[in-house]
Image 1: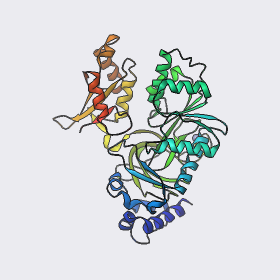
Image 2: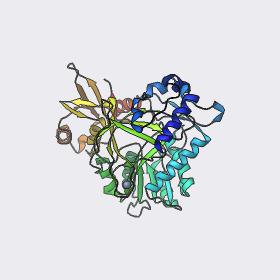
Image 3: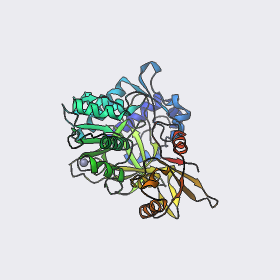
Image 4: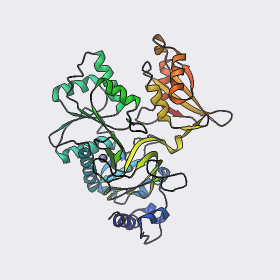
Length: 409
Ligand SMILES: [Zn+2]
């Protein structure tokens, strides 16, 4: 079944995509799934530089023009046909069902549905497909979020976890009663909510200490046009096998063992405008192939541990930026910070944490250092700076996500 779909994809892209016409042998076909490994990879750079060559339909067939979120580098253009929109709706309907969202439920959608962004649109379409009510508050304006929660009493919130934490802090300051909140579930996007062992990250723990919620972690990207969504067992996001083929590869291009981490490489199934063959996402995730307790047999992925090219080597250990930012988030006195990495004179990675002097009222640089050492087994340099310095550094990333990690290597 998957083999058939991949062979269909191969013939489709050889006929319709200028990029793959040049890249693949004519009439290229595979006899066994494993033979996909003989086919070439597609990279982000390919899509950025030869963008329109990936397009398999005439431009007047495009119904939605998108850009990627630009987590790394400049945003890249993507395109959806009418059928791709239907596929996207099906994908997100399935995702919501995995989170045990039911017809008639209400969702507060705090992710943007405009700005050429896919996630909000996908959730909107999926909700309509499933028969769920959507309250499209979008991002920002925290008071408004709580007003709409009070007004429409949604059970579910779709949210970036750090934004949910901001909402909770606002509620605590403004006497909004969280125990009476209608919210029961949070579908978390954009940031990991669980660590390697599926335990909540410090960000998740902080949220959970104020608001009793069931968390559902998700992993998705514009390129794959599919979401991996966690079920009630909280052990990684389930693959939707009819929409995506996935490989999780080590540095030598070999499939990693069950429970181990590798780079996620995706092949889209059933995409019309811009299908991708063996696209290297650069995301490093743990993979789980054993049957889930929920009964589903599909492969699962853990949280994104980091990006392939963002791996850090600090004092002999390999660590991803998310582990560093998560450790800082866990230090409750600090709200605003940025971490920068550069190469030192020995070509080793050197980390510097920029903070404002606000936390010094109730704490000290020494306490912060001791705390970080206990979490990370090393301490970055710490610089106390003006808030404008931090905001400028965060703002210097040309993308829509708040990025507290800056790579200057
Ligand atoms: Zn499951």
